[in-house]
Image (tube, rainbow, N blue to C red):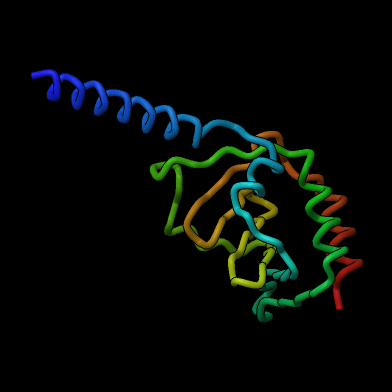
Length: 147
């Protein structure tokens, strides 16, 4: 009888812990907190310019850690919130300016400028809550890094 009570209490505590973690997962957090959870050392940037008037999409990559750091420094002033599965439109064909960060292991984080979205490894979606992003800074960043 005591073992059953102990197991029931342990199950209740475990369930409460799981609920709290799930709730905290969807709370607003700073970009620093977001990138700390990724545990990735990004080494390259890939820019994608959408198709315009039938022309193909333009893509270019930069493997300069200083440019990656510049982008990460810029993003530190923003906060993100993980989107719930029902808030994600998987059928959305996003044809926007994007910046993708990639680490040596192939992990990616894609920033979709116009929609204020961040996509981690094509699975987890985050929304920039105190946006929109500073478009002037982003445009200067695009232009100065276009090869």
